[in-house]
Length: 239
Image (cartoon, rainbow, N blue to C red; front, side, top):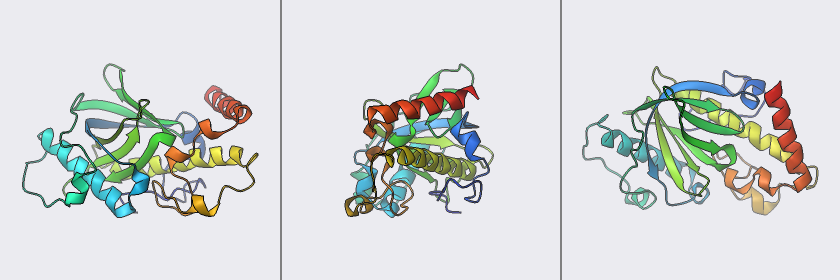
């Protein structure tokens, strides 16, 4: 399975993910990881092809690791095109903090394992890409997301104990479950989502006939369907 994505299809565990649809849609799956830092990303992932997205994420991993002293600063060959997409300096607030990341079809939540403080929380529609590290950073994972202020950054996690592949598969499956839930509701009022214009767009896993997460969210639904989706989420949390 590639370390830079997961072709989740929402159909049990045949996609390689070890966790059930129900678990990811309800309370979510938690992993103990270490938050390493983040790097601002200056462009939307939907404007880049899959290979370029992967290079952006892995360059962010390398920069954060170097800033944190986890990797020696050496002369690396970096495509100049990649440099224009990211900030020169990483943001190292909370770097080195042991966190619990909860992955559900609603959001990714990073919580300080000792204090319970929320370090970051990203709704699933705002997450646009995830990738494992390169051969020198196999235990690291990065995901690119926007926060509530529309600030886009690449968040880097150290996955202790070889969890990076398990985590990225779970993120991929959570994204697809969320996408499918919103698509199901929207199909009640829209007869055909797969227009030629929409098919020309790509997203997270480069799967065909899907919309990028920042182009399809519950906010796009009519008010009555937004209420229905919220009610379904509340019922799942009470179960």
